[in-house]
Length: 126
Image (tube, rainbow, N blue to C red):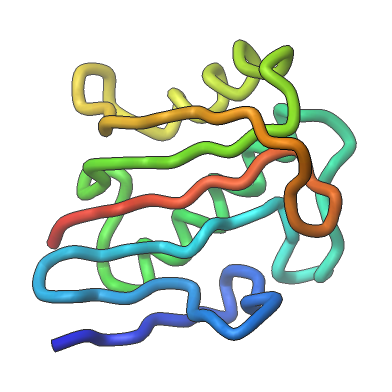
């Protein structure tokens, strides 16, 4: 059985998808970019602020299913430049308890939606 999740505390999907889907005890988020759901504007001043907005969006999506970052088992990070890797790690890592970080891959890509520099998706367990 699957259950769809969407919350107004994160940006509404830009296309034909949902913010997240629960299948059994597995929770799959769609990729989040740095859109502030209150202002509906992109946060792209710098990579640290952009990453923080992405993580706050993911936090809201997780919270919509009564989950949090301790439930996350896998993340996928897509970035426009590996030169930002260190700054992204600093912000991203602050959302997880040391020693309880999820598995992850980080991939540099040619282009991301809306011209952003980072997109992150997650898999969590309930």
